[in-house]
Image (cartoon, rainbow, N blue to C red):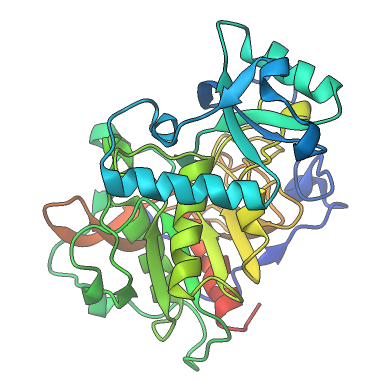
Length: 365
């Protein structure tokens, strides 16, 4: 196995005139999907996010919807009182931004009802779910490969500038922390809760990449899922709200190593963008399917989508296109599976994105 070295310079800005690196780029970095390519869009059955053109005149029942209850945001699973209160904060946050979350009032087809809402001049989309964006390529559950335990976190050299400077706080919104994050210098320990064993330790690994770039950075790791492991527009927004309440979000650099494929150009997400407008910079993973278009939110024009270099400093064959490139194949970080932690090798645009985010927070990019 060849472990990718990350000595500067590692970044190449995407040039739309260079077809080898930037084929079929649309403004904002999102290329046009090929109709023959299989794209799985993940959303809550029966739920839509609607931005009425006029709330005072909007009657959801007239277009086949009713407002969701907070419990509906958890895939209809039981939640405790604290989670329900957090869900109410999300719904209030959306409403202040002119957005509402609704569920079907009956057994109609979700997209037919969304089309009906749009035909009346309102914005509407499914309530999207997200997935982390590692490259699932190794071992049981395609998990990362651990490095010999004789190597420790302190043995890793810095991959970024040696000045130790930073211009902004870096916030990682991901699967939350595993183990004791203070051993890496991470702040705001929000424990990971996930039902998908393929991404256990994903957030800790992504945050370690940023700290490896610049150990002097202030890096806070937030859990962007609900406590049952569900990742959706509402749960990511809930994490943004916690950062707002902590006073850390404004003027921060945010990393999102997660995403989703919208269900077509008419159905772009409209819930999460209400939160994306707050930080100074938002960086997101472009995805690992080799497409010439990106996951959302990397495809959002206001977001910096990051693709991955392979170990030969070319665009990785499995990486979606991006505005910028960073090391993403066989990178070394700190992996913790909930039992023990060690250095490990993992791949994906998930781990290219924190390089760019750390570079921005350090004032280098």
